[in-house]
Length: 196
Image (cartoon, rainbow, N blue to C red; front, side, top):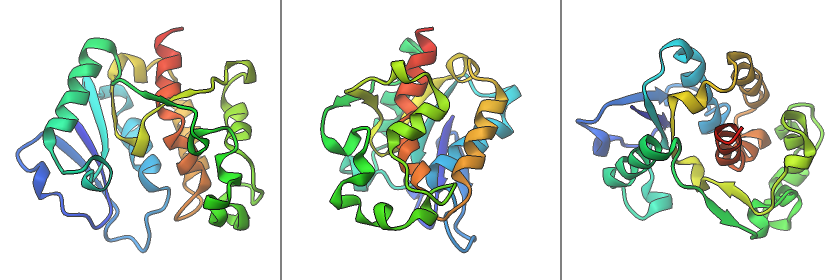
């Protein structure tokens, strides 16, 4: 199953494939971004998830060079075999524990309303709300652009309440800082559970 976070993109390239489209195109804005779409799919289908879920944005050409369905099918194959698609590792500041304080993320630094509690926090501080701090790895495994696949048994290692908590955190703003944090957390979150 390919789970597609759509906001006004053309999805013709996905025609003929088993997809669930989470379409926010008719909404005034894309509240929670793709993180909210992925979480809503998990929550709504928690008791009946497909064996493997591929989570993707509706236009991967911006990130992967083309809208090639084989990119997603390759991720699915990895998840079927290993439990989740292969993450990348980077020590670049953009994936670091305080990336949102960097001048290139000036908007996140100057807009506390992008944060759930109206106060700028770092990615590391967000991480501490969910996991023991001694588990914070650096470099962290990441899925750039929040495009990845994961098997049902790995998703279900977290209780439904965990995902419900996350969606409340992301659904407060059209461009929440927490959605950027989730992009940096998906791979670790599932990798951590796989190895418990």
